Length: 407
Ligand SMILES: [Zn+2]
View 1 (tube, rainbow, N blue to C red):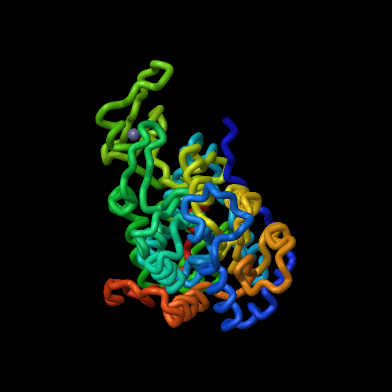
View 2 (view 1 turned 90 degrees about the vertical axis):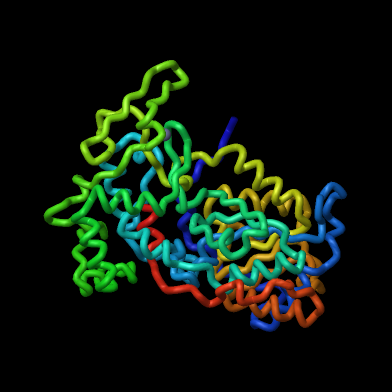
């Protein structure tokens, strides 16, 4: 079976969007258009097999998490961010190369604290309210930060590219929480743990800017990596899968695997199994057919698609939007900057439509979506009976280390 591989996103400049309808170029105009989009009668172009033709499926990307302090892959104008040091790890490197894994885990160790502290932002909370109003049925996200499932656990969320909150064993496929793993990395790498404590205290990890990091006393090499003089990352240690360690599995070919650890429990390269990997889809890794089919089902069950905070640069996301278009679903896009092939999504729209057949707006989701919720409430859409106090809205902080976690 031909599974889609996660590839390095398309990096060319994208043309500026054509705003649709034209009055969606102001915040009130965009709110009015999106309000029509979400509440219009089902499109006549849809066939009769859609489970819930009045509902919307959301497809989100890194742009929705920017207001939580996580870096977007693209800058404001849709061009690739100026970070020449960014080089992601590939799946095959991670699987095959002990040295590459040390580097990955050293960076992840430093980046985890900020990711762990970061919180959903008003865009995620607004989606929760749209769900309570019965307007949003499912969310498909490319993000690995878990913010959707934290903000609105009651709306099913499909995480297309996995999630950083857990690790998975590449041999036995058991999941482990990332949080406990951080403590294990601390224990195995005391010099790094001391360094991390200092770096947090100095604020050096609050920025991705290498000069600012240096100014705050954090020494990085030209690749942006920290390399401690007394503990270079070639000495960084990571644990073996605890399940495989207790009972080394036999492979599908009938070969007994071997797992060897040092006196503290760190994985040794003489092992043939038990390597833990973040539960994210790395570049060059294929998305499982289960996830791929669930994402297609999410598209097929709803009557319209709202794309938020993504340029659809990864093929796995783009093909879902194309699928929605081919099914005759109205498409809305809320994104700062151009979107790959976006003209196609708005071909042959009626010239007098006010948003019911398609919307293209270019505004920050954390500002616009709360206004949209307020407008829908004014129109009589039900507010949830749940007290707002349950949702710590605005409780997000500024940290910017997303790429450290993935690269
Ligand atoms: Zn295992």
